[in-house]
Length: 120
Image 1 (cartoon, rainbow, N blue to C red):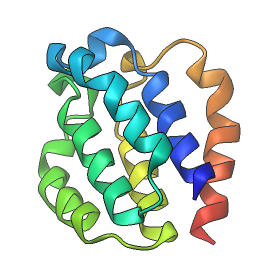
Image 2 (cartoon, rainbow, N blue to C red):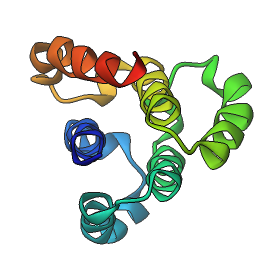
Image 3 (cartoon, rainbow, N blue to C red):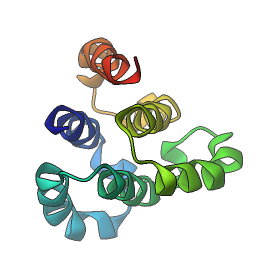
Image 4 (tube, rainbow, N blue to C red):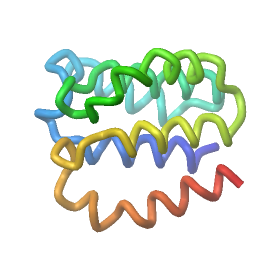
């Protein structure tokens, strides 16, 4: 599971600071520690929801608002690698490229490949 934790941290690390709410800056350090230490997929999915809830509205595609509620429910019910990795990938797909660091585009392909390994 450590690899899935790392993929979540990689995604968050590549979010631009203006792409997240101000409150995130206060929580971020302990959130990173929580993700790094998590050995529970249910908790990791909760941390994914927490990250998403701290994204600025303009950081996600407009259609995300219609999907968000059911996505959160799926996260809160997720308990296996395939579910959590798929939900992380879905969030990444719906995050606007403008909200991501410039180097994300260079690293994204490898990140997506690693996510797909969990979905098989």
